[in-house]
Structure formats: C-alpha cells, structure tokens
Length: 172
Image (tube, rainbow, N blue to C red; front, side):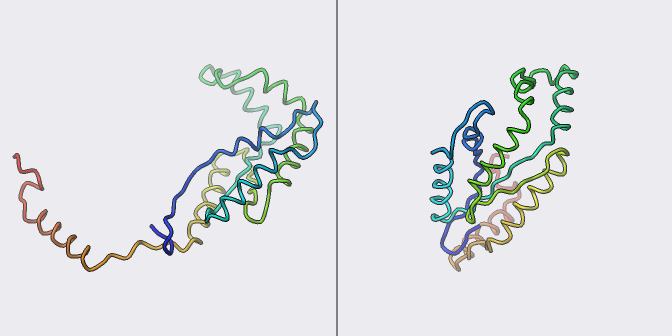
C-alpha cells in the first residue's frame, strides 16, 4: 500500500530507553539527557513522515501482586519471577510519580502517549488494536495504481495459468 508517493511501513519499536530514564526511587535527578533524546528522536521521525504511536501499559499494584503470586505458584511461570521485582514493588508510589514525570516529559503533539489500563490483557490488547487500526485508517492509504502495461501482463499470466492443466507444474 502506498500513500501519495511515499512508501508506508509499519515498524514496531520498543521504546525501552524511556524506561531506562526512570530513576530508581533512591536516586534524585532532574530532566535527563535521555528524555531530551527521546523527544528529539520522535521529532526526527515525525519530520520524516513517521506516525508515532506510543503505549504505556498501566498495571495496578493489586494486579502486579496477583501476577507475581501466579509466577511463584505456577511452575511453568517460575522463570518469569525475579526477586528484584519484589524489592522494587516496595517503591510503588515513587515509581508511579517517576512514570508520570517521564510520560509528561516525553508526550508531545507529534508523539503522545496512550495510557492503557493493562490489568486485563484482553482489554489492553483491544484498546491498542483500536488505536492502531484507527491510525492506519486515518492515513488514507490506497493500493498503487496498476498501469495498462501491468494489467496486460496480469491478463497474460492468468491466461497461461488457466490454460495449463497441471497448474503450472510441467513435470507431472
């Protein structure tokens, strides 16, 4: 599909550097260069025709606890559990403030954050799918126009395939 002389692509980018800019609750720092880098990167992409969709999947403290307990109870999920996660959960409120600061600092007109409630995975997936689908529909994408020459080649290819009783496999 093309959009007015531009090739369109869908690229998934895990913006994990945003998470890396969040200070641990025991650290104090002002606006980091990392936050400015994130905004500059988004500005660069946007200026070059990239539509940016950012999602923050927000998990409640109760749901996080439930998932941790599931990882401790279900042997198939033991590999997902980290003692570091448990230690960090003690700083829940500080992390919420840090997330809010990072999201505020990196949410721009060109690249706003979509805050998605993620306690129920099917709800989060439906919300993300709706935002992505709506964004794609709003791009006004059209299939490329097919030239008369290409239509003639397509007709010849179809006639050749329809004429061949072996479906194109001449070895049978």
